[in-house]
Length: 449
Ligand code: SAH
Image (cartoon, rainbow, N blue to C red; front, top):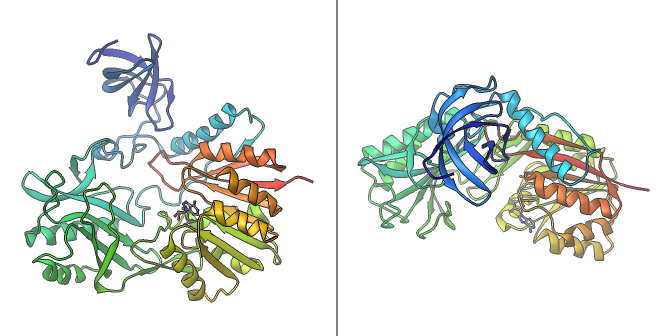
């Protein structure tokens, strides 16, 4: 098989990144945007020892699960790489990811629930970070083509709250009218690198963050004044990022106008969100995820609960009124400050958050003889460490509730807990990110007698 060769392929599976999978001449071939059951004529793009990549030239037999995507850019940029699959099939795809991982780990007797659908299939994101670049002599916003930094201009971001799209386009037009230069990555010149817009569904408040190369530029005052007139905007921030880097946000924020935060809600708990805080993207699905976790945890009024990898305290503060005490830890200092402030904002006096790595704090609490009843963990993609798991087990909780954004590391960690006397029977996938391949899930481990 060679590059540029055209071959007919029968697609038999979907990879975890939602690439169509085919087999030919002993090779596994990954075909972007192809679906199981389809027969496609495809062009080979790259050949490795055991696998190859190809792209569709023509669909010869189409899957009934395929839907026509209004803008091919959504799939092309990876903004919504599942957008061509019917929503109920997306949910099945996510459930199957978990089933397959369990099979690989020889855990066939674990039940996997149906993926909990998101209340909104599109327009669910409460935040958009979009690159700003010069395209054909004009400042534009959009999304990078997959594996590149070529900007594909867009005004409809599909998975983002349409109110955010409206503000993005308004800000783009203000920047254009004032001749503000877009950032030029190649020469590390120009001005606006990204726009970051967040909107609270609960309050309607909108924060606009201009991520710029310099702290100040000639048009800044006028631009700020014009943005402040956009309907709904309550906060304008300049984030200064002078570095040659792919990291989007710089370290310093400057308030240009309005408040330096917006207020959002998860269920009936209020959260003050500052520019650098991590906040769950899908505001309507998050309380449903937590409700499921809380129900499965069977919390009691005299329970001591740990909220590990707490961010701004969304989980702990949601359970605080049902239990005796909440303790949490998180590595990002401003997030911990937000968590403690958010406790105060909601009149919650039995929750306390500290700064530190979960794998350091947990052993410390265990050696101080802390006894816990329920531990919630919500780690980043790399999952937990064995140190954390050992220390968590030492505090002898009745239950450990594992909320995960990466089923592969979750299954690995669940097995480590199993070896130490904790058992689980069921995993519930929850769709936090419709139209994308991301799989979130909840599992409860129970201490065996
Ligand atoms: N539970 C929160 C945040 C989940 S995201 C929510 O639902 O909003 C995972 C969090 O873990 C991030 O806030 C990240 O900063 C934090 N984190 C990453 N590594 C960590 C570590 N080693 N110890 C503690 N927190 C960590």
